[in-house]
Amino acid sequence: MADYKEMYYSLFVETAKAIELLQEAQLKTERMYATAEDGPMILVPHPSVPKKDDTCD
Image (tube, rainbow, N blue to C red):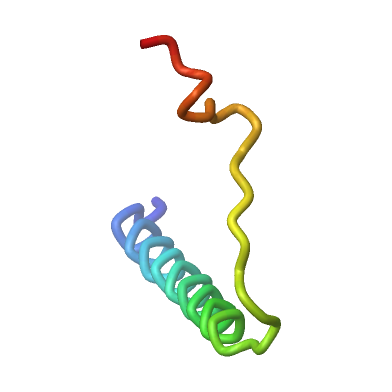
């Protein structure tokens, strides 16, 4: 009979490792972006967000 408890714990450990790897990759790329010398960042509003003068008050 399959040892479901062992299977579950094995899956849990490997999933946690994968999440940790993804988090490390995200932090690495965020640091790369933050330290890049590309000039100032310009925020462009999303078209679906209404401007202050477009609201119905």
